[in-house]
Image 1 (cartoon, rainbow, N blue to C red):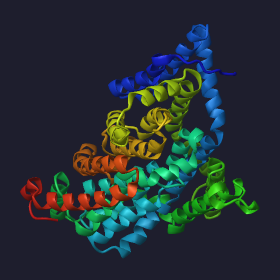
Image 2: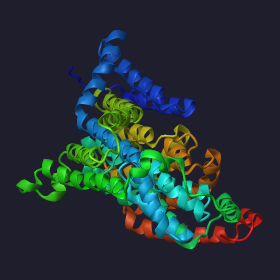
Image 3: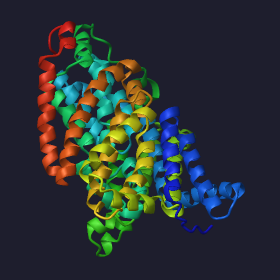
Image 4: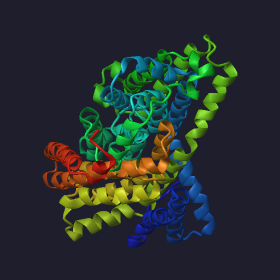
Length: 506
C-alpha cells in the first residue's frame, strides 16, 4: 500500500508520547508500542479522510512493510539464537569450565577470566549471561567469589559489550533503527560516545584487578570469603553434556564471527574492489546472516558425527532457539512501525525540526538530557531495545533541525548508553534476570549489589555527556570520566561503612 505524508502539527507528537507514557506506567512495552502505533495510524487515517477500518488495515500494512524491509535481520536473529542454544546443549560450555578450573588459582585470575569470557561472547547478551554463568560458577565457588559478584561481572559484560560490538544482534538492531540516516556507519560512530558501556567494562576490569569493592557488594564478598568451600560439580556437567569439549564452544562462535565479517565484505563488494568500510556498511545484515548460517553448519559437523545429539535433537534445538527470539523481535517490529508512522506519515520529524529550529534550545545539553530520559525509561520498562526503539526516531527528528545535525552522533550515543544503564540494573530486565539465573544468585541480591555500581558509572557518564555536548567530541570526556570513576571507586572503598560492618576488606 502506498503512503503519503500528511503534516499534522503538534498532534504528530501524540503517538510516541502515548507509547512512552504507557510503557512507564504499565511497564509493559508490547501493548504500549502497539497502542502508540495504532494512535498514529488513527491520526493519519482521519486526517486523510479515512475511517477506523482503514486505520486498522494500514497499521498491519505498515508492520508488514517493515518486516519486509528488515527481513535479513529477522533471519539473522533466528539463526543466531539457534546457534546459541545448540552451543549450550552440546556441553561445550561445561567443558570450558572444567578446563579453566585447572588454570585459575586465585580470585583475581578467576574474576579477570570471567570478565574476558563475557567480552569474547559478544554476539548476544542472553547467550552471554547463561554461557558465562554456567562456565564460571563452579570456579567462582571454589575460589570463594560471591554469587553476587559473579552475577555483576556477567551482567556488566553482557549488554554493555553487545551494544558496542559491531558483530552482534544489538548492533544490527540499532543499525536498523537508523537505516535512513546512515545505518551501520552511524552505529560505529556512536561507539566512542557510548560512555556507559565503555566505563562499565573499565570498571569490571578495575575491580577484578584491585578487589576494591564497596557497598553491599563488599559485604557479599566478605561473607563469601568466610563460607565453606563448595563442590565444583554441577548438574549441567553431568550426563550427555560431559561429552562436550572446549572446541564445541569455541569453534562455532569463532566461525560465526569470522564468516560474518567476511560475509559483510562479500555482500558489499569488497572482493570486487569496493573499500572495506564501504562494503561492510552496504548490507550488513545479509553478511551477518551468512556468518550465522556458517556457525550453524559448523555446529552440525561438530556435534552429529560425535553423537553429542541426534539429528532430531539438533533440529529441535534450532526450532527452540528460533522461538526464543520472538519476544525481542516483536519489540523491534513494533518500534520500526511506530517510527515509520511518525517519520513517513504524520510528519513528526517535520514538526519537531521546525520547533527546535525556532526555539533556540541549548543543544549542548541535548546528550545529557537524552541520557537521563533513556535511563529512566529503560529502568522503568526493563528493556533497552524498547527504549532505544522509541527514542531513536525522536532523536533523529530533533537533530534534523537546522544547526542540530552535529549533535546527532553524541545524542544517539547517549540514547544507547542510557538505554543500557536502565536495562543493566532494572529488576525486570531480561539480562538482569538471566545474570541471576546463570550465576544462581538470588535475584533481589543481584539487583541490590549491582545497583550502586551501575549508578556510580551513570553519574560519571552524566558529567561526560555534559562535557561531550559542549565540546562535541568524546575524546575529552572519556579520559576525564575514566579518572573520575577510578577515583570514586577508591574513595568509596576506603570510606565504606557498609563494608566495614561486614568485616575486613576483600
